[in-house]
Length: 485
Image 1 (cartoon, rainbow, N blue to C red):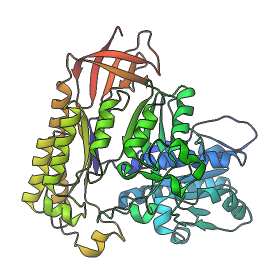
Image 2 (spheres, rainbow, N blue to C red; image 1 turned 90 degrees about the vertical axis):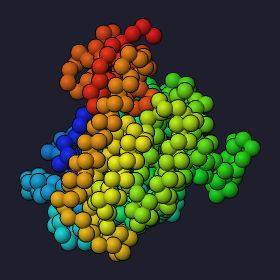
Image 3 (cartoon, helix red, strand yellow; image 1 turned 90 degrees about the horizontal axis):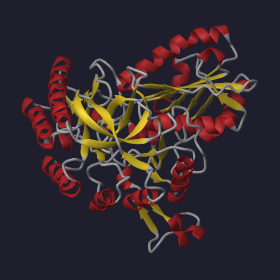
Image 4 (cartoon, rainbow, N blue to C red; image 1 turned 120 degrees about the horizontal axis):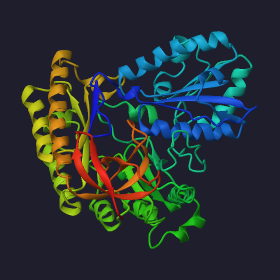
């Protein structure tokens, strides 16, 4: 159960993050082998699918949005919750009909679920031909060759170095305006509820010059916003000494590039290129990052700042490495430097192991203190192999988890609408991303604070910046009118 409050749409609270699915775009290159990818879960998975498509494009594959046309079908999977994996297994059962019609169809499972289950997945899902972890995508051509001989193929090796920094992604899910740039991979945090360190390996940061080059290339192609991605972007650190010595001279007065440095480098590509980032771990964000955000107008004033809980004892059990007071001090610092207009979102988990009713109320009171613009809200789902699964009993009854989550969701609705109501009558610059979901006569775009504005199209078009005045709001949307720039 998850709900997102404050985005374009409110997702019903029976829906899961794994049910957010991206499908490959149609390239319509006749005569080539066809690749179909479904990507589940997080933005990192969507970004990885673009890397996979780029690797296979060099092998003569073109992407298709139709599984019926595919020679190879990949499911790029999420493993963050049990429901995520159940969704993939159900989808494999559905795909079996295509395998029966076309026995030559190659079925592969990529990503976190592949990494967690490894060869066991081949035993449990007979139609699967190959299983590939997040660090082994360069081996896909060789693995497909192996499968073509009638063999099964598995590679779930976790690398300490792989960042795919030399691969230009094929923009599968792009609107031509916004794009993802992966700046680091893996996670060194061992939050007790989380499977990511086991499925994506240790942290390693990408060469900053390749990040800037990719951002420049996107801008030159007409993109006007990039989102820098990582499990924990604030811990980004790149040392020239560990890489090509010849590049050292390009780094002004330092041999270390941290996240604040990288943000500035990307911001300087063009003032017309907006820059966002996700996700921040509260323990790692620095004043340098906040002051850099303040310095550059094109660094968006929005921070995803997951709390997970508002109670210090539960945070300790979660191994978040901060307590409630410390988290609040960071929130205060964000607002002190960037102002109250800076949007802040969070992740919240209800019903973690041993959570009492009073501790649940601490989460509600934290939400009221911060006044999040929106949140990603879950009830706790125990994952095999995590520290929590080994150390704590999942002892909160499901009906209690759901009731607490409902209280969190209802409060966030109130906070989101209140935050949006503060924008009524104000003017904001938005980047137009395309048509509104509900009408081709309206366009939608985002403010620097990540709020979605919908307004009549007029003579405006996708990719433009336009000023809008807010007339009314919903929980997730600003209802606006375009004004003269």
